Length: 347
Image (cartoon, rainbow, N blue to C red; front, side):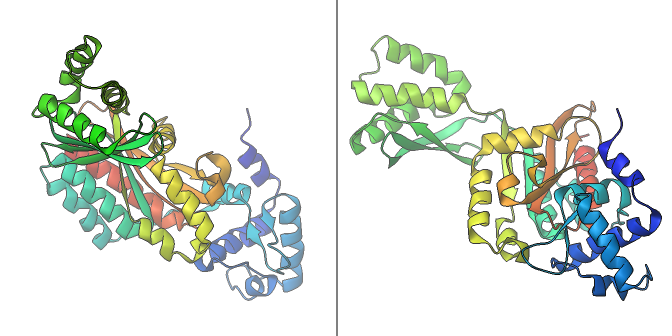
């Protein structure tokens, strides 16, 4: 089957491609609509303003550009960005400073810390929020605490022996008293301390089922449902760094859009679905705007790549999220090389 992007590229001549390429590059640099006068002064394409206006009208008819509000300038559509990224963009090279910064994580023998470092560096080098999806380690628990958050909901706070802390919202009986939350936490701590949840789960559920737990009905229900919810979580952990970068970005000054994006990031299950989509096939994957259902409302793009273990099996995914006006040519090689370094570390 023919590639729709390639078909569109075949429909436009070389001059039109040049105008379109420079318009998108100018937009990615400025974040502003690009007018014909701006392009007419561009020495790399050397065409008149009238010619540029005609080309821009043709590109708008093809669905590659659009005019925001009543602006005389044009912006690329998501389809236009996809055409640019797939067919016209020249991917940049890493600087030596960028390469050294990414290589530094390969000197850390602590894999979990190296992944945290990779997320931090990705965010810093790309000025975006970074995402690292990593297999979850089933470490022994040190403590569990329940905190009421809303009617019918509680927050399970889990502290692991390795110092990691995870929070998970669980269902809870309505009108549950504070004392029941404390009793439930004490009960689990007495049976979980030094053990993984997987090791202790069967014993706890059997004790409650046989009425040997010496808990009232509401507390027993909280423990039973809580253990099921906690143990039934994802097999992956998600590391997110650089949320503040999104607030600082001029393209994300719409606070409502930022709020929706932060809500998306909190719904880890959906984020994991998207990152898992990046595991299919080879190389860097680019999701622009509505091409992924998760971030389409917030007008975001995701650039991600899997990383592998010593057996060349895909074990996780790392990437960045930002506005559709990302510097794709710069970000793509950074994500690509970071995934290579993490894979090298795992070997």
